[in-house]
Image (cartoon, rainbow, N blue to C red):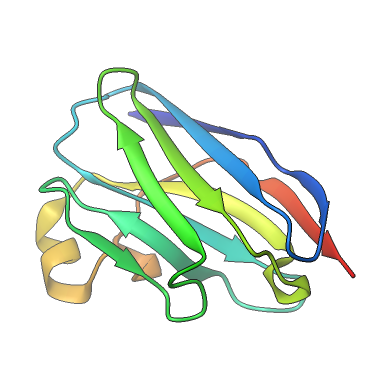
Amino acid sequence: QVQLAESGGGSVQVGGSLRLSCAATGYTDSSYCMGWFRQAPGKAREGVAAIDADGSITYADSVKGRFTISKDNAKNILYLQMDSLKPEDTAMYLCGAATFSPPVKALGALHLGVYNYWGQGIQVTVSS
C-alpha cells in the first residue's frame, strides 16, 4: 500500500511559479515509477511528468521546458516545479505511483492505466 499526499497548490498569475510536493508513506521503496497528472473540469486526466525507478524522466509536450519533476528518495517526496505558468495549466493536479514495472515499460510512464495509487489532488489556478 502507498499513501500519497499532495501540497503546494494555489492561485498564481500568468507567468508565475508554483512547486507541488507529494509525500509518499507506506510502501516507499524507491523502485517504482511516480508521476504527476492533471485534470481540468470536463476534461480527461492527462499525464504531466513522470520519473521512473531508474531515474528516467518523461514530460508531456505541453509542459516541456516549463515544468521540472524531481524526487527526493531519502524523504520519499516527489516534486513538480512549475514555471511560466499559463491559464491552460489550471487544473487539479494529482500524484500517482505505479508499483508494477512491466506495465510502465510496455505503455509508458505517462499512461494513466499503469498507476495503481493516487493522491487526493490539489488545485492549481492560473489567472491572467
